[in-house]
Amino acid sequence: MSGDFVQYAYLLSAVLLILGMRNLGSPKTAPRGNLLASLGMAVAVVATLLIQEVVSYWTVFAGMLVGSAIGLLLALRIQMTAMPQMVALLNGFGGAASALVSSAELLRYARDADASLGGIVPLAIALGVLIGGLTFTGSLVAFGKLQELLRGQAVVYPGQRVVNGLLGLLVLCVTAAMVLDPLSLQWFYGVLALALLLGVLLIIPIGGADMPVVIALLNSYSGLAACATGFVLDNAGLVIAGSLVGASGLILTKVMCDAMNRSLGNVLFGAFGAVDATAGSSGGAPDGRTAKGYTPEDAAVIFSNARSCIVVPGYGMAVAQAQHAVRELADLLGSQGIGVKFAIHPVAGRMPGHMNVLLAEADVPYEALVEMDHINPEFPETDVALVIGANDVVNPDARTDQGSPIYGMPILDVDRAQHVFVIKRSMNPGFAGVQNPLFFNENTMMIFGDAKGMVLKIVEAVKALS
Image 1 (spheres, rainbow, N blue to C red):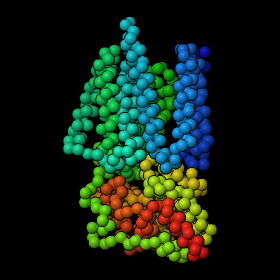
Image 2: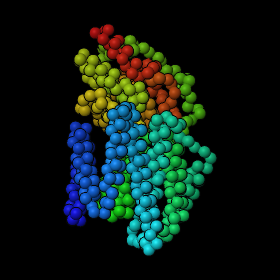
Image 3: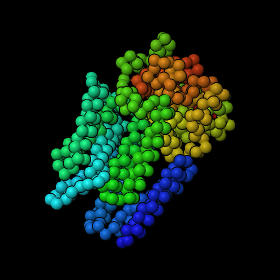
Image 4: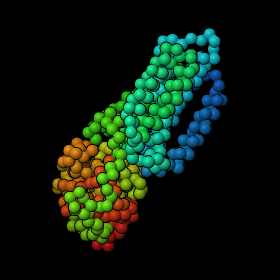
C-alpha cells in the first residue's frame, strides 16, 4: 500500500477527530461528535492495517475481537453512576497499552545484536514507558477510590512530599540513563518499576473531591503516552491522536482547577481531602447552632407556595441513582407552574460533566441545565433551592472563611435562596473534610435519608397536596 495514501488517511483521521472534539463541546452536538471521532479512529485503524509491515492480521483481528467483546460487555453492564470509574479504567488501559508497545519495540531492538537506536526514538520509548506506566497504576488507584475499594480521602504520611520529590528525581536520572544507553535493559526495568510506583504514590494523597481534576489529568497522560508511542512506531496517526487527547486533557485539567480556584500543584501535592479530625459529624456547628431536620411532607408544603426552584445535584444523587426520581419531581413541579432549573457546578461529582451525564440519562432537557456563572445571580430571587447530595460546592465558607481549605473556590450561591432543602444521609462532612455552615442556616431545612427515597417521598407528598 502506498505510503502517501496512508499519510492522507491519517490526515483525514485527524480532521475527523478535531471535528468530533469540537462537537463534544455541546450536549446537543455531542452524539455527532462521538460519531465523527469514532469514524476518525476507524479510518486510522484501517489505514494502519494496510501498511505492509503489519505481518500477522490474525493476531490483530483476534485482539480486536477480544477487545470489542470486553468493551461491549462493559458498555451494556456499566451503570451511568459508575461512569467515573469506567473513565479511570479506560485511561489506565490506554497508558498500559502505550507502555507495552514501547517496551515491545525496545525488546525487539535489544534482541538484534546489530541493532542501534538513535534520533528521537530512545527518548520516545522512555517517555512511553514512563508516562504509560504512571498512568496505568495511577488510574487503578483512582478507580479504587471511586469504587470505594480504597479509602476515598487523601492518604498522607510523614515526609510524603520529600519521598515523592526524591522519587521524582530518581525517575529523571534513571530515565536520562535509559535515553543515553537504551539497549542496556537494566535502565528500562528501572524506569518501568519507578513509573508504576510513582503512579500509586502520586494519586493516593489526592482526595475524592479532586477526582474530576485527576481524571482529566490522567486522560491527558494517556494521550501523551500514545503520542510518544507514535514516535516510537513512526506512526503519524498515533502522534496526532495522542497529541489531541493530551492537549484537550490538559485544557480540561486547567478548567477544573480554575473551577476550584486552586493550582494543579496544590491538587497534586496539597493532600486536599484529608479528613480533619475536628470537622466532626455530630451535627453541631462551631458556633453552637444545630441543624433542623424536616420531613418530605414539610418540603411539599413549601413547594405548594413556590413559583421557582433550582435543583443542585451532587455526588449523593449519583450514589443513590436518584436522577430519574429527580426528573420525576421536576416534571411534577413544572406541571404545577413552578419553574425548575438545574444548577451545574463544574466539579460536582467525580468526573468532568458527571451531573450532565446522569441528568441526560434521565431525559432532563439540556436547556434546563445551567452553568454556575449563569445560575448564581438567580438564587436571591428563587423560592426553593433543592440540594441533593452536594456538599463542598455549596459551602458558604468558600466565600467568607479565609481559614477554610476551600476558601476562594467558586460555589453555587444556594444560601441566598428564600428556602433551602438539603437531602443528605447524615451530617458527615464532604470530601474536603470540613463542615458546611449552610446546614445550620435559618432558611435551611435538612431532610435526612437516601436521596432517591426522599425525592420519591417528596413527589408523593406534593401529589397529595395537589
